[in-house]
Length: 114
Image (cartoon, rainbow, N blue to C red; front, side, top):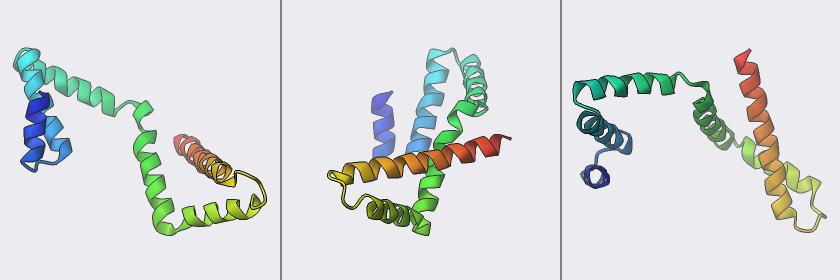
């Protein structure tokens, strides 16, 4: 299976489609033909409907929005001004910025769910 996905990737097939082809082939071979494909479909629907995976693409989207609007740079510069005299401020700047962005993401998720 690993070799098959590697060959598909080297042929230029995008990663998502390469994995999809290999998963379909594996379901067909290892789970018993058509019954394996039915089980593959059921598991796919169940995993997409799971709320626990929702924050992953939303966190990526938040990062893209912060990057392209320039807000991330402004937040980092603001935190840098606040802790300019603190020794080891690069580490603290990163931690504080991450904490602020993580809090904003969490508040967004909670408000989205209501």
